Image (cartoon, rainbow, N blue to C red; front, side, top):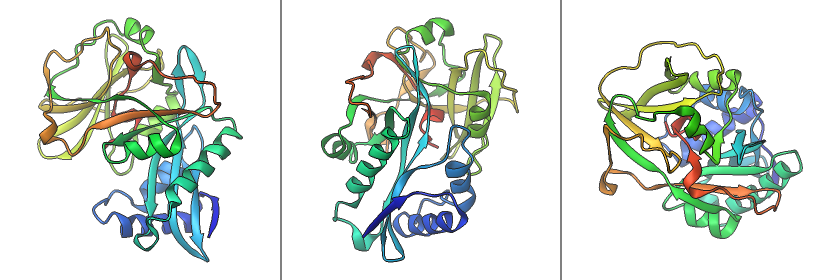
Length: 284
């Protein structure tokens, strides 16, 4: 078995697409165009991860993408843990753990200081027990109508111990996900609202954020109707005036924010200080 870094070259992208189709037949968004966008076009940097080969056969894949964040008022270069797949004939051999361990060692040696992700209830224990992640907190899952009632965005930002650091280029890249492009509308208070398909009928995935006064152009109008919000706000903020919690029985799984510091500095996130939305972890 050979382990080599991930690539966004055409032959690698085609191999990943075939592996995802084998492992997750229902994940129809894992097209070559989507993987090219995700792995090769991110302004923050190209894909970081490792592949396992048995001879010339790709049998396992683990990928993160660069995703910078502001943590305790410090700008830090980090990774978002995203895609993993192991060919059915090679499962149960610990390949994911080996690939992830190699990825984090490589990342730490190349200037990345943390990795975060959103894991479901089944995968969270593996990240914690085998890969040294911390469970920060479960995410809110709300459904409602209209805007979130955030109030003072500058105070919200001040209360955020962890939040994604977008640039104008990286935010524009995120909007243009070829598998699910987003509508973005700037607000008079300087915040930005965005929505896209939730892959559920009659409901849109929705979020709002503050971009540190970056100029982002609107590309359409936020549509009326039901919306789903998945994410977190710092504890002092109560933004869900017109939203209610989705009962657990109606969710595919509870989603958890997980985090690992790559510098072994015990630099952890305050549970009550997270600002997160679906744009920050690629939920849709």
